[in-house]
Amino acid sequence: MWWIVQKVFKVSAEQNVERSPYEKEFDDMGYVVVPEALSADHVARLNDVLDELTRHDSTRIHNVADILRLSNEFVDMIDLPTVLPKIQKLLGNNIWVNHTHYNVNPPQTEYNESGSTFDFGWHRDGGAINEDVPPPAPLLSLKVGFYLTDLSDLGRGQTYVIGGSHKTGEKKPSREMLPDTATPLCVGPGTAVIYDRRLIHSIRSENNSDITRRAIFIQYAFRWLAAVDAMTVQHLRDTCSPTRLQLLGLSPSYNEFDGAAGRSGLYYPRAEDTPLAGNIPSKMTKIIDSVRRRIKRYLFS
Image 1 (cartoon, rainbow, N blue to C red):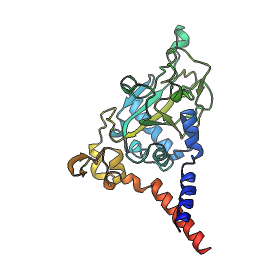
Image 2 (tube, helix red, strand yellow):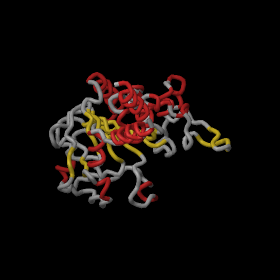
Image 3 (cartoon, rainbow, N blue to C red):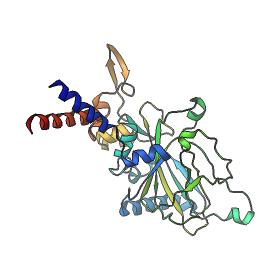
Image 4 (spheres, one colour):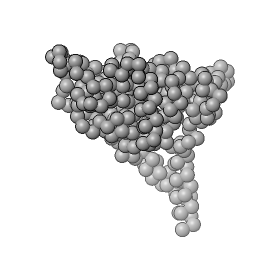
């Protein structure tokens, strides 16, 4: 009997480590594209919200953080079934949203008119992490960019990425340089792109079109990583599901661990600290279920 369990467990474990296509692409390139992550209706509502938020000055670039305080339409993006399970596969369940912002980039002509050099703003996400943590730095967080306008044609303010730079540790290009290794994300409205925080990418690119480029960014990180912005979400506490309470950082607890009371649930999470884990079976649960099914087939087939 035991040899059956050993054999089945080995096969199940080997299957368990197989990566899905998007996991492999994310590991290889440092980003993965998720088409139709937002419905057309949701895209339209978000565009309406951004139009209202920027109507006082629609001719300049807007980059605003801590946006969950501004509209429930933004809040509804944090647990999208088209994206959140992928985040869980990549980061696990002990996660929260620690940063949000939107970008609104209208057509810009001053660079062409003045002849000045365009500033792409190449960077890696993480701020002080990139200075404080010696390379090779760990993943720690992911950012999801939701694109609300049609960026299928070049020159519409696309984000540029340097694929694979999350692994190489290469230096960032100078801010005005557009290297041959950079790829523009020419995506349609409603597309999400999941970025490894270590990936070199641009803040902006030239928008020489007649459309306004709109994007919303949501960052997921381990729960023990501090917030990047103010995260003004206390007003949502009484209206959220347990999963949203976790993602918004509104469910901290202190537990007893190894006889010591007062341990933070951020570092020593219990099941009630991470209700998100109930949405997708854990790896061990999947292994056990697979073993159970295979044993039944061996014994009763």
